[in-house]
Length: 198
Length: 291
Image (cartoon, chains in turn red, purple):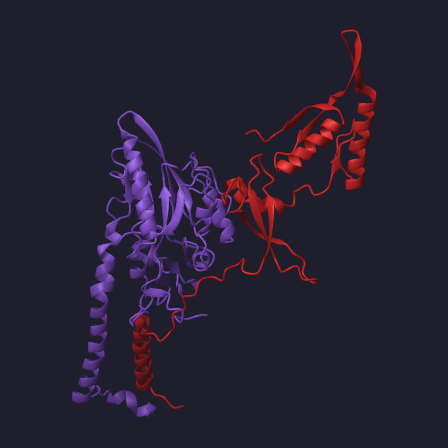
């Protein structure tokens, strides 16, 4: 295209006016104004209990996907459970940020043991851990169970196991708490406690 | 999905065509922050970051509990702590949840030069549409509460959305849901004003004679309101007593803009008639070789 200097200046001027008008609001651009998509729409919901303190607030855990066979689910969001009587949907700053604790690379996911005299933690399986606890408990109970006491010249059966104590979960419901007490009392334990008193 | 098809938008920035006004029966929503119930735990800050998938940089301790020290492009709400003496010798610790007030007459929207970058929804929420944001920062200047922040990463403005994505499906904002003391409430604007007035009455009975509801009329009222113990002195906690949109914004957007357009059109018209009447300036020497 042939263009002399004068034509070039004219074309430039027309372009400048046009772009200025667009900038002043004569632009034909459509306004987009949708909200962000609701990010929990088809996530899988699971109810759980906040693992931090003994108040044990109810939480709803939202995971990626609908549990289909080929999906590896992963926690994408956590918020308070509005149907839980303890917190009715609210969460404190720690609880509100509990997802980051669950996804933390430092989170302990397997039982660990520090042997007597050792200075390091060793990862063991759940079976090993439960067996180990059971063996310790049995050895202590066999050695120290008080079967009878003498009172008023009579021998009374008491079956007291005074050398171990049982710390019951603060997050238990009534039913789970009842079962925990039954197990501990059935073994003869006297000292029971829960942290559920704050 | 895109566009104004939903008709849920009632005002747009820098737009000359009319915005849909049909949905007049949409319930007006509001958030009520009862400062007398707030313990400054910052659960709202955490819930906000979680819902909006934001993670701010780890900052520095500035000597007080404020963390981060101010709103940022990644912290859309921040607890501000004020040690003040409303009466001489009577130290009080006031805590305010800072964030967007969602004005009925938003200064940011008025100041914004980019079409559709700031919208006001039919339910009262003022929302930033990032795809249209040009990062000029006029919204920061236009805001009477100094709320929007420009991100250094993408040069776009960010602020609280009042969880417009949650409210759109009938949920409360994330900060409201999490608040352990019930200091943040959510409902229709009428209900929140009524509840706020009730709380103000209770505070007055307990000796806070100047308790009041912060719902400033200078910006047409707000969709985020505070119950304050000292509503006569909102400056105690960094809020303007009678916030209004800066007169510069009204002059610039109200008078200067049509004048500038008229001036530009006038220049074009004058140029055209000058060309027709007087004709081009002939520079004969120039044309000889080129033509």
